[in-house]
Image (cartoon, rainbow, N blue to C red; front, side, top):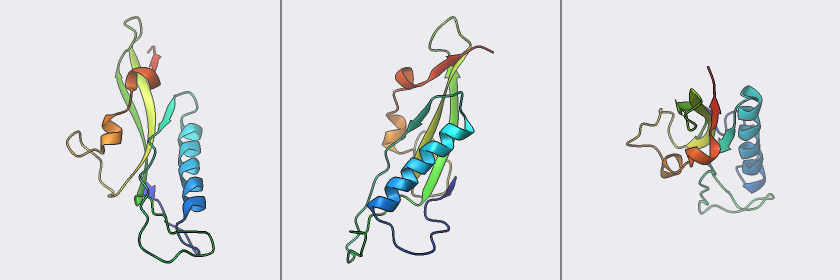
Length: 119
């Protein structure tokens, strides 16, 4: 977990900056786990009623960027397990549980995205 806008010294959150933040989070996950599949959950974007600046309208992502490694029993019975790296944004710095996780996390198509592995 890390702050979405931590270290932002000037400017304001806008589409251009947010697209870079989203892309950076996916690249970070891919670089940290190069042998595993990575899935980026598209973040929600809010548009507060603020005056647009030089870079266009204000656009805000959830305040916490997250990367998690998940594993499960094998999708293929001949294998030992399956794994998936997931990158997402969330509003609070708390580990989501099955009850309070964002619907987008619940909607991940594990069967299509995860990769089987042998121990």
